[in-house]
Length: 287
Ligand code: NDP
Image (cartoon, rainbow, N blue to C red; front, side, top):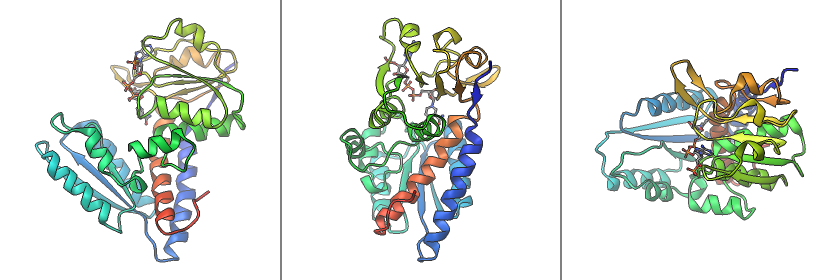
């Protein structure tokens, strides 16, 4: 039997429609959410992401402000720009596209962003708030994964979840979100022993490794829900971290690559920008 294909494209389109409705409701109060995206340098993948972020921001009715800076921009100039955006009342969300050029201290730049405008959820304050159960801005990729998991499974409480990958942008916040929903969470990484065996214990398996077709079909518990975060460019095009052809024979549900987690990431960025705007204006968080 073949697994249910979790269609991230459709899910993200539905979410963007809801966000556009939220933006329209704010317009009635004279408020337009604004998202500022800062890109330093010419990284081709980053340019693609920034372009599509800008397009989708405008499509839901928000203002998009793009700041493209040359590769040799100094850290001081970048910090000054972030500071200016922090003070600009028309900017509700600030995203600094990563990676930054080597001569710039990424942590310093990220932590310069006001936590309430940190729509990527990468500042230490938001990471700490998430970890301690306080109201936080939650990183977009794991937030999108969580939404799809809740939609697929309903209550996650008591489920065994294995997250493969411990990065600050995906693995760790994903684990925190699953824990917040009362799943029993294990985080695996490159030093984990018997990874296939561990994965086979998972009702929920999230792969965020960055290796094409790394997770095999026989690592998957029959009926499990598999979320493939990986985006790997290969000669065969974009592929995930999970061997989809094998996995779909075993899993209960699985996200494809492309068309799974990817589209949800930008939709969640817009959702966070709407939330940031609501909070800045003393309105309740959007549904
Ligand atoms: P990182 O490279 O930062 O982290 C990869 C993680 O995988 C590390 O924790 C690493 O372990 C672990 N890992 C590597 N090799 C193995 C192995 N052999 N066995 C077990 N674990 C291993 O990647 P990211 O978290 O940034 O991204 C992961 C993937 O997700 C990438 O393909 C990326 O392109 C994609 N991505 C997709 C997004 C989307 O919107 N869909 C957004 C962000 C990322 P260790 O810590 O021990 O080195």
